[in-house]
Image (cartoon, rainbow, N blue to C red; front, side, top):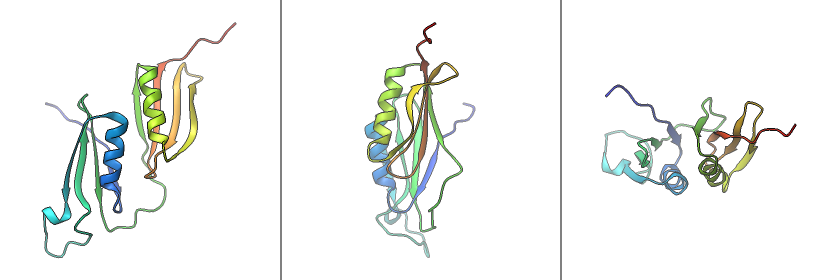
Length: 139
């Protein structure tokens, strides 16, 4: 099987909402395990928080998230890149991700020949959306 990679987003009480948001943007199915479902002696955190959750997209990609008591404020060192060949699909993802968030760079033709945009979603996660062939500059 080789190996796979998935973003694992750590939040403070918003993991269930974030995974539902990503499901609305990308499609797929959400699975959640809450702290109360796996009681561990001395474990901190709200019993309703997500101990582990994920949205399985129809294309085989998985986005994972969990809640934890650690302070997770501040800028992450990781940004998630969604890329592909279909400009219209990517543009739909871009608009879905910034709904309730903010646009860092608009989704528009890039100097390297594809479409590119960057957003911060409502949960503070930065996403880069890239791909599709940008229109050629007119001579």
